[in-house]
Length: 179
Image 1 (cartoon, rainbow, N blue to C red):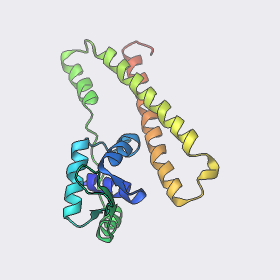
Image 2: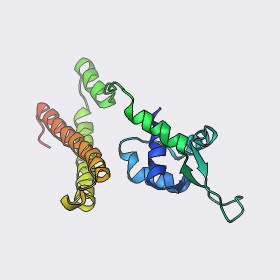
Image 3: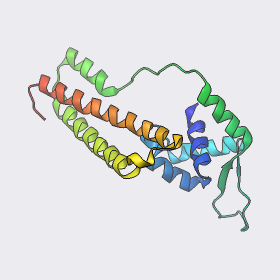
């Protein structure tokens, strides 16, 4: 249910074509809510059909032209209602955790290399998030609620990556390996 809300959020931030939206997803919302380009285009059609968005009028013929979408009042109302809705947290479903559990039964052959690979990936992601924070959220920019909330989402990502890097480092030490 959250993909349409992610799209409504992105379109309220800036009306966009489907292509622009997929690129923006890849650079921001996609860090915490991933979707394929095909899923985004399919959802745009559903949102338009539901009366939540519309394609902006174009001076050019639409054949071969990219449509730019904007959120209609019904879409804003839906997003506002969704923000206020109560929702329980989802359980963590990470295949790496399950593989560790399985290794307790069948042995851990080769698992250390996979832990090291994951650690490297989480360190890269943490560095990228930290770069974004330094570039986009200097203290003087955090005066508006909009920027503070965006920064809060980024801080959540930083805290998660910090958790994973520490946890994976500890896991590797359990195997007698120092990353």
